[in-house]
Image 1 (cartoon, protein in one colour):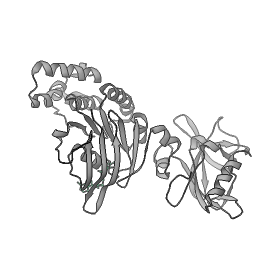
Image 2: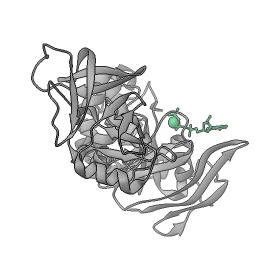
Image 3: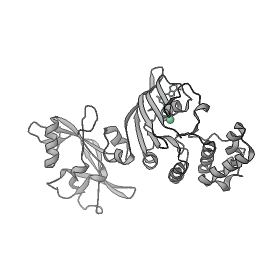
Image 4: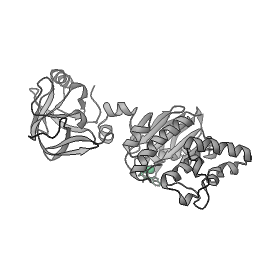
Length: 360
Ligand SMILES: Nc1ncnc2c1ncn2[C@@H]1O[C@H](COP(=O)(O)OP(=O)(O)OP(=O)(O)O)[C@@H](O)[C@H]1O
Ligand SMILES: [Mg+2]
């Protein structure tokens, strides 16, 4: 098993800073997901861990041992890519045993290994089927079986589900989780799909522009994003962010046009920050539409433009200036679209617009 440490890791391609000074440790047997938009450096980070790319600067350690100068084979990693590199004309069994035969493993040992891996992945029934005849989800399972049959110390996965259609992906996500727990192997998984990250990860690493923005357990990143980018990227729909301006007398206006009422305790906090503007963040699920304001809470007036259903939840859309926001509608569609949105103190997050960081 293995702990992976990335120390001041940099990987530059000419002027492109694909990975720009990353520090992170993946604990032994942990399932870590690197999450971020296209081009943020996820694949490059993974390829550096695998030894497929040399690093520009910094160090990579496996269990405290520096591996910068070791090739992929010496690192005992297994990597599964977005597009499975299987031999289509061979059956699943022959694909899986390929790396074992290459190692010169005895036949009886090989049989035991295949039995073990195919029972974990529940692919016993597929072993004699040709790869070209299998549906995409099964192909990916065979690719995974081939990767893990050697008992790697580290499993590296680069968007392994993105080639599957949505229906399959959901199912594979759950199966994946079970498989990783059964294997009990240190896993680094790369994706731009926040739902995948939220379901699978012990911890998520949020990346942007080659840098780590924030790391944490899925729930804490969802509930208390320390950075605006995380709040925006995690959750679907993402978090609402309202630009607030604070007048010298303490009155607060959203986008300079809409008076915002903050509770006594939040108003006290605002005073201590001594800022003239800040960003008020709240998840749509925690911002409730109501026909009357709750004076003890945080609220402002809105006019909904429409109502939509997203994954069985009713959301109301409203504009401030020309920006669209969402709130949650609790009890069926309201008769009047004019009303208030209300947020309780424990769900209100306040950010510094200068650096996007949460204010404490
Ligand atoms: N071999 C290369 N040569 C030059 N630039 C590269 C190379 N590989 C990656 N890059 C650049 O490095 C940056 C990070 O790329 P990377 O593939 O790591 O991103 P990613 O987060 O995996 O994106 P995606 O979600 O699209 O797969 C991008 O700007 C990319 O164009
Ligand atoms: Mg990539």
